[in-house]
Length: 320
Image 1 (cartoon, rainbow, N blue to C red):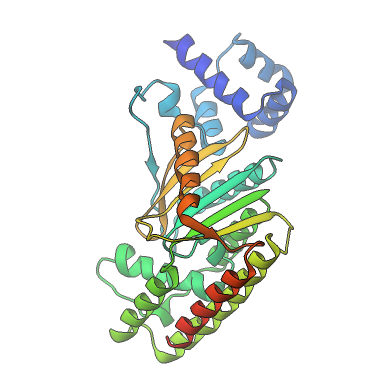
Image 2: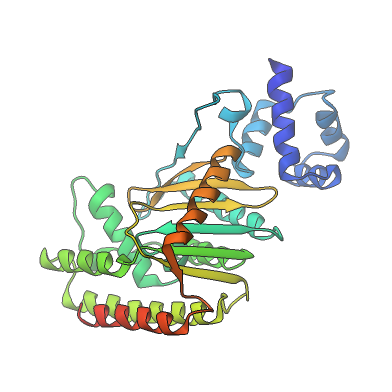
């Protein structure tokens, strides 16, 4: 059993870094050990200690369950990590930092590909807009995060560290070589209806609503520019924006490159269920790309439909 799981673990390392020289350097940096100590572990003269296995799996997003054989032929493991966004613990902050580090490593792959099919504004985009990020934290608190106390939107003030993490999170996606979004045709209708509801129960004031309206106009201007150019203006990396012609039931996404394959499903407003199972990510890739068949691309190619779409969303927000 030791040989079986250890061989599986080593195979997972070589999937991340196929070249032994690259893998050796990465392990030296991560574990702060000498080159010869890495060689001994890779030759199986000695085994990686348990604490090193855990650290590698955490930082490199490797599934321990899959390595030890917890997965069966027809079972795929998903992990849900719940985080607190207003008063995050040290572990929460480390988890956020670790995921952004993963994003940066993934984005540095020359074949990095990210795709998201969504019926809400993508977190990879709205985290670059402070009022929108604050709104989604407020919504999370109202629905999932606060059992006894309900705070109005005006009292939701994330820490400076959370603002920085949001900015880094959004920036990391702009470094991905190829990004695709398929939006539900009602994505802005859902958002406007939610804001109207919170306004009706006096958790969002008219002044708050005006802040959100202005930020939404800024967001639309930005996405109109992105879809017109077919790329993120900050990095020049490709962006494909589609509008689904049928309503979408949930939010799905995948990260795909030679060394990284992760699939995710949205849960509880600001959380994701994620899996590093290669077969599951291959299925996600196939399923999500099939949704293009019932969608219209408005980035780069169809100017008339792109203008019509954004004009319609501006009218909707104007009447918020």
